[in-house]
Length: 241
Image (cartoon, rainbow, N blue to C red; front, side, top):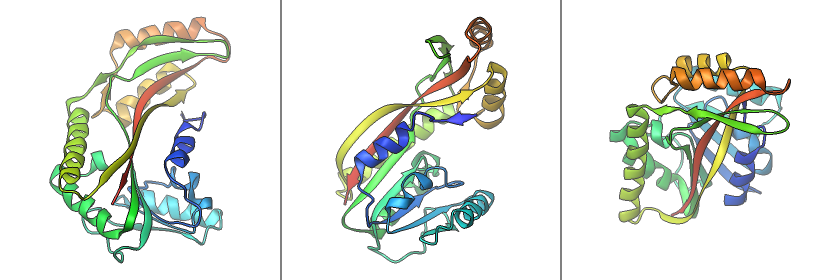
């Protein structure tokens, strides 16, 4: 699988925040996939995730990249053991929707505590929207159909949106800027895509057999360089304290 070869995520992230000389905290960094897209510009990066295995991988990559200004550690977002007003930018990396609803306000309160006055919180996440399955080659792309949103995924979205509406009404954060963009996942074959969806995203997106058959048919008849891709709707919001 290949994520975002167009590098849209990185480009729009840098449009929403200037990382030069900044202290940055990343919430829900996973294995550090997004971290490396801005880390070289920042003065210091501190990134955490609740997943111990993911943090082990991120730390190994930091050693390989000789990045002494990037620190990874394990933590939940509900209680972040860091000094208040110590960061210029906090990035919620596809994480707010994954925090339990009863913990979201605590997490957003912690983020506010850690941000310096007039600090920036970047909320970056995918939105369930019946993501489109497409087959593409060097000449064109064709639509095979749409995935079906799972109820759990939709509930995660609504929980995140509700939490941000609440903290905005409390005056904790002010919305400065928001944008949506397409993020692509690519596979060499439709069967690889289906296997990924069924093993990794079974709680979020489902693929109908008819859509899978159509993708397979389009892939077989397309050019030799044909791949199957999923068009994911992403939203990025810049909040200030």
